[in-house]
Length: 504
Image (cartoon, rainbow, N blue to C red; front, side, top):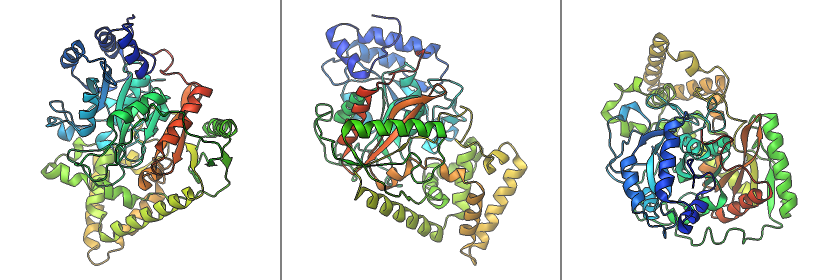
């Protein structure tokens, strides 16, 4: 019994419920008190009355029976605000539960509220006009990462034992790394995205932010498996939690490159990852391969193509809603509107094909690739991007005259492209060369999304009191091997389930 929320993993809380050591009612009371006292700003919406109703009748025989749970605000929940972290949809209400939400509810979770995210999941931070800034569980002045930043902050901050997330370019692994959690991105299609599946950009994978490996494995047991509404979803596989630790990893091959072929990684963070990777090789008898890693960077062409898919959703709200959007998303939509054409789309597809081929050739020889999850420890919370470099967006932010001039240049480029079709491509290339940090966001995590490989972020230490995550990427459909690797790290060098001092 206690006045604070459960600070161990989610599975142990379910065990405590079943043993009568703690009740779902008192746990929810403690969770509510902790949320109200927290300065992390991890929640966009709370549904406490409904949570109390569900807690009172919780079925403790279910896998997550009675467990307080957070749902990332990019997931649609019937009756809850469905803003996708954008002022453009501040009045929209969810019409249905997504397939993943349906499955976790059927497994007994008690949804407490929606956790904050980046607008439309477009950035690796959780800073929006509608919700403000979400702080890191270890230091609220630092970033929680994104786009699943609120889920990570809530779980690592001791507010909830488990919360869901989504990962289209690193949005589970990035905040997991910054907050000292397990962040598992499964093989593409592992957890279905119905009932109204958006196929573009064919990179998004759903999952959770977890304190322990067995929590992530049980989440797979509950949520993974084919759904007819998602044609890319994979067949159901049984026994994720039951089979943890049962796979023979000795002799498996691994490439260790914290920079993933040249991404700028903080020297201290790199040293932490190198040490943890060396220990993993020695402990498990892995065979280290000295292979070059050369994955093409995902250019602005590809980024624009993804953002252009917002057009259908914004509909006739655009361009009137332009200044409701965060600066980065607004500029991204403007770029897409004015510069994206068939030539740019073709180049983006070529870049993606080269990246996929490079990943396939790498995993023809290696079972695992180990990198850093992030370029370094968490950066200041209010920053809209993870780079300290001065970008065009930083320069233009708040300067209406510059923004209008920029819009005029783009419109002129669109007109010129009618008789000079390479103009948008040249403009884009020049702009991204001048601001390379625009392409570095998620450079460590995005390749696994493009190729569909499973990848996990594992806590392996800290730099200056802030967590460092080690990313391990595996072959398609070998998610279980990644979970076993993560389990070994958890057992050999245990990490704190919550940030020091949590709940805040």
